[in-house]
Image (cartoon, rainbow, N blue to C red; front, side):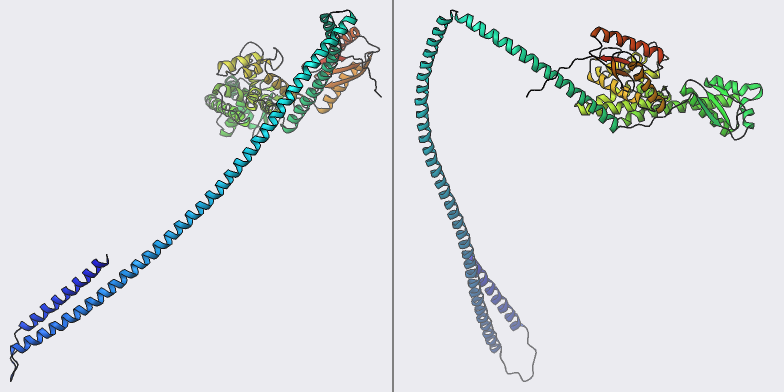
Length: 534
């Protein structure tokens, strides 16, 4: 590379000399001006040009030599720099090689040390194995000696007792069986009592937790609705000429419209809450519109009925969303929405269903079950009440049939619907959860049309009826009055007397008290023996 650079510099210098020579020659051949009194000849000019060319060539040679020397110095500097870089790289590589060699040496030392340790452990293991073999041989010899001694002693005992070996073994097993049977019975009884106590405490805790974690607002509905009117003159327009307006309205809506002397209101009465609400909304629209005649009444009622259907569908969807479930069949959603206008002992059935769904979900979470499936069972358990007047049978049976018809395939949900009133044997845990949640929601004071004072009074009367029988020590009304638990005196009452008193208490409750649903009477007679070990 250095030779190439020098050659290039020389070539450049030669080109420069040639160029300058050519320029001088052109300058020499130029026609000189005619000067007066000129004594210079042409040969003199040529000589001067040649001298000038030689000077230029000498300068070019000197420049070329200077360039060559500079090129040689640059090449030497570049070579020196590259040699330094190569030396540094080589030193770095040597350092890495030395570091790897040190690591390999350390690793070899570590491997040598591990091999020494392994060899030492192998020697120790061989020594231990040798000792174990010797000990095993000694134990085998001692075991043989013991077996011989035991056989000899057993033969001596059998000779002294006069019985055979099988007879002795049978006697020993029989004795152990008698002792263990008593012990097993005692342990089983203790475990049963412990499991019963634990299960009752756990179930009570789950129910209490579910009740505390969920609280619902209860409202009572009536069978009549009132519609405000701007003035009493509107009553005449509602009635119409010869009563044609009111007759058309009652015929289209299926309700009774009561127009009496009560100022400022008109009463709409019907047992069906949906029809009553539709009539109330339609009458409100007619009063606001002011045009009240049979044709307009039919138009407004039809429009209101369509709006009511959409409103019912929206109520059902909102209930499903409230309990965080996937949307079921639209017909089931419509049935849920209709429950908003259905009451049971003045308790709103849709609110009751939503509350039961939440309670079932909470209890299922505590028990480790599927909370979504439990909420679905609770929400649909009373769906039959939306159509029980249209189909034959009670609402559990009707609800199960409707749910099956509209795509509900889960056996847990269907069984919870049909069995939440204990009409059938409970085959799933979710049915038990729905029954418990249904009882909790229905038995809350204030949930149904019954004041707290009346509720407490009924419980006191229930306990008083049971305490009036001879041999009864205490009586407790539990589960919001749905069960009466009676504690009998075991000394004054036998088992047969307890059965008779239980039946008589149930008959007395039926004759003396008024109550919703059923009341379960349980008479408990037990004998307890207690002793203290000192």
